[in-house]
Amino acid sequence: MAAQNMSKIRMFSCIIWLALCFLVECEDRQQQLRFDGKTGEFRILQVADMHYADGKKTLCEDVFPQQMASCSDLNTTAFIRRLILAEKPNLIVFTGDNIYGFDASDPEISMNAAFAPAILSNIPWAAVLGNHDQESTLSREGVMKHIITMKNTLSQLNPLEVHIIDGFGNYNLEVHGVGDSGLVNKSLLNLYFLDSGDYSTVPSIPGYGWIKPSQQLWFQRTSLKLKRSYTKKPEPQKAPAPGLVYFHIPLPEYASFDSSNFTGVKQEGISSASINSGFFTTMVEAGDVKAAFTGHDHLNDFCGELTGIHLCYAGGFGYHAYGKAGWTRRARMVVASLEKTGKGAWGTVKSIKTWKRLDDEHLTAIDSQVLWSKSSSGGRRKKPIGRL
Ligand SMILES: *[C@@H]1O[C@H](CO)[C@@H](O)[C@H](O)[C@H]1NC(C)=O
Ligand SMILES: *[C@@H]1O[C@H](CO)[C@@H](O)[C@H](O)[C@H]1NC(C)=O
Ligand SMILES: *[C@@H]1O[C@H](CO)[C@@H](O)[C@H](O)[C@H]1NC(C)=O
Image (cartoon, rainbow, N blue to C red; front, side):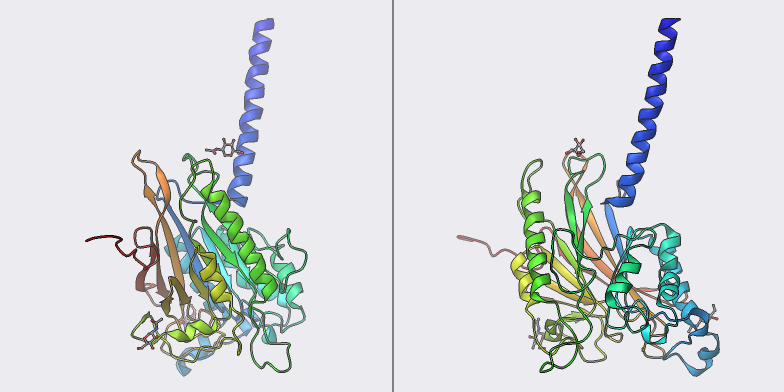
């Protein structure tokens, strides 16, 4: 009898323990991004400039006249839904001008509708602000405060460890190794999100906002901290984990390219701030960043490489955003892939690739390119040292 009770108790506690493990696992799945154990991939869908307003009532811009009557914000929604089904991303990143505040009667309703496809997909998502998100009744702080309450978002108002920082929506996310590998607790891919502001508040400087020194200092410290934990035990690595940076307004360095040295197109000028606040240099110095991704200029969708860092646009996504009739709305995918170790387990990141998807019948993929691979260390191959 006593032995029977004991085994019941044991069984019961085992069930509780399993239930707890399951809960913890669920929690982990929601909170901690991870590479896929089957494919060794981490897939990011970037949606730039949705310019969402009042849904069905908000008409499209720059489509052909005969397309006008049947085109609204709902076309933007349909495009995201199709992309999610086709690309099965592990994270969806919205790089600002998510809503077009000026035409949004209620910014919360607009945001709820704009992010709905991401929320309904149950895929984690992250957002930063553009220069139009605050043009309705909510301030930039108010917009970001609403975003962070939404389901399945990993967006944050600002880093907890920093007391004073410019802007709203500066944060980073870690993508950890595969569950059963020795890299389960290590961040193999680092994602940084920054608020590139809206407009200059300095009277003598006209134009758009920029990434301020306070944000750059946070970025520097975060990058250094991540580098330290990556290169120390267990499984100490030699070089920092690759980093990707997402924000809205392109840096002045985006103007360093022409069609001879970028992939994609440039159909309008680079609308960066009129001064250079040095964030590109800060990224180069940090040493881990392989690419930066912005939106803002809807007619540019190129990627060009400058001193080991790719500067990429996603291209215009939203139908209520300016565009060019006949030039299909688009989005950018980024996929980081792990290498297989000698023992057949997943190792660290081997390569990072990108392409764009067009909103045509077949969601045509174009301009596929490798942004970084471990052997080529960002395109800057090591010069052979010594003889031969
Ligand atoms: C917008 O969506 C409607 C309804 O699905 C469709 O008929 C129309 O062709 C779409 N317009 C554009 C420009 O894609
Ligand atoms: C990962 O972290 C968990 C929780 O702290 C720990 O139990 C586990 O041993 C760690 N695994 C590895 C391989 O470092
Ligand atoms: C791209 O090519 C142009 C000349 O065609 C050159 O002026 C520019 O410096 C190049 N940019 C980079 C980043 O190599």
